[in-house]
Image 1 (cartoon, protein in one colour):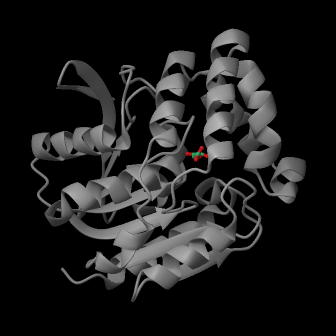
Image 2 (cartoon, rainbow, N blue to C red; image 1 turned 60 degrees about the vertical axis):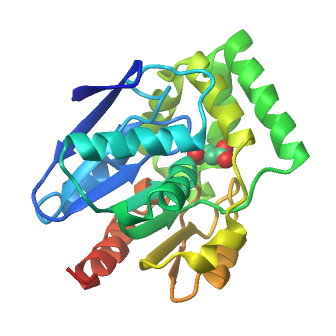
Length: 264
Ligand code: MLT
């Protein structure tokens, strides 16, 4: 792990492998370690950069923060690593950041990988739920947040027969900082709706969804695909919200095929 000072805070990140750069942005409330299955499968052909986004993992908490600020942190990290353009992949919140990054810094993006995510903003109900979760993290702690989240995060078969995956993700959640959860939930509540912007995206887009995702249903991916001309959509059976972990082999195969087909 390495740390980079960006503005007044420190961002933790990891770089592994050799080849064209691939930046992977984790979801919430997780950290860069959620990309382990992709590092194992792809780091022999790609240089994979995995930051802990602001307030997550070993990065400092910045409050208030925005999706745009998280995107600017990632660009500062790319500058530091002398990466001009990269494939930008994000899962869930990571996807919100990837879209914000493309909107502000389109020339830094070679292609987009949007997994278990959406382009729309929150409903009023979604925003008040975020405030509730933020308060719960502060008053009851991350164990309570994990108890609430775990049943919604996975496909039923993962919950039932993959205890090691459930335990690893639980560990990630309970090790998250409540103050980071507060800042990120409020940042997500304020994020822009990017749906109308999707047709303007030029680089190739791969969209991945989990057929059994309860948090961001696969129909959101269908909207992303419909609004992004030329995008490729893959819906993975037997996957919930964390498709890259629950169905790692399939996820990696789809991702590798897409990456290998990109123009240099
Ligand atoms: C995530 O996994 O990043 C979250 O589910 C995103 C969200 O709360 O909208």
